[in-house]
Image 1 (cartoon, chains in turn purple, red, brown, green):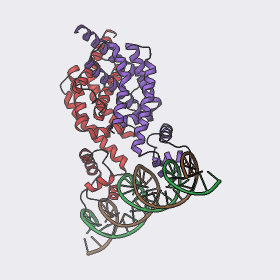
Image 2 (cartoon, chains in turn green, brown, orange, purple):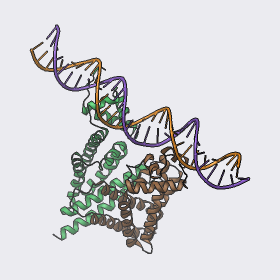
Image 3 (cartoon, helix red, strand yellow):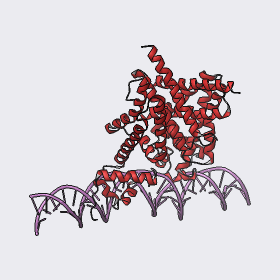
Image 4 (cartoon, chains in turn cyan, purple, red, orange):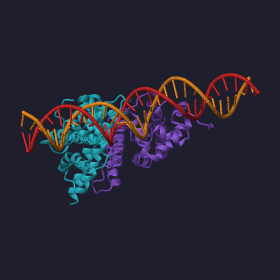
Length: 195
Length: 195
DNA sequence: CCTCAAAACTAATTCTATTAGTTTATGATA
DNA sequence: TATCATAAACTAATAGAATTAGTTTTGAGG
């Protein structure tokens, strides 16, 4: 009954921490309320709904992820930047895999706020691609190629879909990114010749 | 109250149909029971739990998907087989996207039955890769690369993550698969020279 | 025709999220 | 300092989820 300085922000922060600690599936309004020492219904004085909590948590997670990616590619170019970005992406997805799930579950929930998030996610990728001398259209295509591979790999890895074969996952990932690097370098050369 | 010839199989079949028609998120034991004209509790005479239903539905979906892939690559080789496989994968994920979600949500639920499913999913992929003259280890790596790309692309596409840019998605996908084709051909040549 | 198991039922439990209505605490104002 | 309004806590209730226990009914085989 005594009041603590709760706010929308602190509730979201608590949600982030709870999801990271106990996992996405164990998360509920009841658990969140318990972690804040209030009753479940009291949460609604600070936030509209569970969906809004997920949206806010996802937004926060996107920021964290993009920050990490930006730091990873700082001062780097082309293949060096590409591998740093790819490794940062995978590392984030591994170290914060519960948050990563929230990000990925987010996309279907369509609203204006999440449009911004989508832009943020593309940002570091486009920055890396800008070093390869592609025209705008090619950049869009390769942005999709790179995102697909990074997400697809981490999703399978996290789900355990790769564990049946006794081959080094780091090496698999390196091959995937090297494949894209080769493709990018070839595409860049073509665009250069065709200009 | 009059009995119909319900069985575990017919319940799973009804679940598949309901999920395809109304969507994964609208599915529930209550909805399934309603579609079968029985009470919710009566479902438990035929199947153990919701989780088991999802597992069975996922298994059935994997079969369908693998069938479609197998038909797609029949009589084809190398790049031709690769593109057919990739297109079949994406087409299935689009046309049966609710079932595809079940497949993907499945993997975390770990048990023996799903190990088999994982094997089935890899089957057509390995068949295509076998035409590139890779050694076993390389085949494992490239199997992961291809799966990652196909899943990552369809996941993003289905989630709407690609719609912000006015670029043709078919062409993006073609570029992604061509990139892998080039990588495969180069890797195959290397393995040939090193033997 | 009778019996028995399988398959339906009802009713209850325990978990969700959410809303309505009430009390209490606290900061601002008279 | 006393009052007052608001924000933040509360309790209680609703509606829906999965699941279980216990009961009735159905229908096929002996």
